[in-house]
Structures are given as C-alpha cells and as structure tokens.
Image (tube, rainbow, N blue to C red; front, side, top):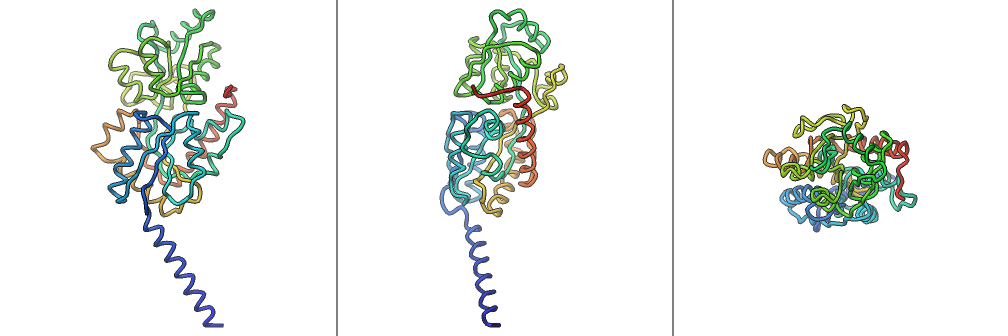
Length: 324
C-alpha cells in the first residue's frame, strides 16, 4: 500500500513537472497574432509594436495575420477555433469583440466564453468630426445644421455596421431626433479619406485616424466620446459636456482561446505592460490615438471586458441598433 502511494505521488510530481516544463518552453514555434484590421490601421500598427518586442523577449517569431472585414468577426471566429496552446492570439477592439453579439442574430462565437483576456492596450475615445467647409464648431451647431437639411439628410461614414463610428453616430442621432445617411466602408482609412475629400459630411473617427486630417485642416473636431477630454485635444469638449451623455470608451486588447495556460497568459500580460511603458514608444502610442495606457493585470482586464460587454450591450439595446 505504502509503495503504491509512493509511486502515485512520484507520478503526480512527474506530471506537474512535465506540464510546467512544457509551458516554460513556450513558444515552441512562431506565434500568430490575428488582428481585426487592415495593414496600416490603428490595430495593425499597434500590434506590430508588440510583435517586434515579443519576438525579442521570447526568442521566437510573432507573425501578424491581418483579417479585416465583417467588423472583426472573421478574425475573432478564426482564433476561437484554434488550439489553446498560446501559438494563436487575437488582437482586437471593443466593438469587434463585444458589440457584434448584440447586433447580429447569428453568431459563431461567444466573446466571454471563448476567449481569455490577456492584456489591455490603450484606451481611446472617438472624435466627432465634420468636413472643414461646413460652418459647424460644436454639437449644438451640428444639430441645427441637420435640422436645416431634414429633407436631404447629410451623410456620415463609418468602418462598418456595429463599428464604434456607427454606434456613436446612431446614438447621437437618436438622442437628438435627427437623421443622416449612413455610408459603411470596409476600412477606417477609406471612410476617413472620403471625409477628407468632401465626399462625406461627418464621421466619428479614432484619435489616431483624425489627427493627420486635423493637422492638415481637412476636417474639424467638434466633440469627443468618453468620460474625459483627450490630453491632445484639451479644447474639444466631450459629448456629455455638450448635453449628450456618452461616457463609454473603447480599447484594444490581446486575447487567447479559452483554456490557454495561465502561465503563458501572465507572461504575455507582464511583457505587454512593459512594452506599453517604454519611454521611446510613448509618442507612437499618442499618435495612434491612445489617450492613456492602462496597466491592468489579466484579472483586472477580464473584469473590464465583462463590465463593458454588459454596458455596450445595454447601450445597443436602448438605442435599438441592429445590423440590418
């Protein structure tokens, strides 16, 4: 009996050691990071900063796999089906992961059950911008302009149904009782360029996408979403300050298929936070439009994801936004 127990204990020790060793050896081959964005997009640029640093730290290649389209569903669905061994990761944003389940009837993955949150990368609001030729400088003037154009509603662009740009504008229009023509694009860049060229009247744009257009005088910013003003646009009032409550903010984040070992998740979280704090990258983050760089643990980020899933879902339901 004693020898039997002794053998069992030895087997358990070997099993634990083997498992720990296998996790310590990660990554054993190149790691794929799927990003829900096209080359050159905010998410693409941000994840490549991480991938380059990961490769140096973990001594293995981290390959960025761009899968734009369907408001992020293509990339998310692909990663949800992959092995939970740390060799396939997802870099995505709030709307793509949390909003899609609330606006589409048929969904092939669960944002909470199918993914393990690893690390938050940035926090950002979106700017309400108008074409530079329009005589509009704040939300009140924007609403007044829409009223004068009720017979022929102006247009606004977004990077797809259910995107942050779409949700923000629809909420604004429903709360003010106004109408606009929604023009969804496949990419954020395409929407921003048509706005800059005068083919659109307005749009909500992430700070990183709006910044170069503002610097060239191609658009004018009149409001920002979120609970506080941006440090880079301190003179631009929030929607809430201008009478339209809108305190939700967006983020980018790194995720893994559910079941990925905690040791891998925690190593990636620690490394992501280290990279986010590097002094030489602060200007890069700012240019991407990240108003702040939160340093949350995996548990803290998971709590935020669950809270945002509820809040964004409630926001969509109250504003009757659907993908139709």
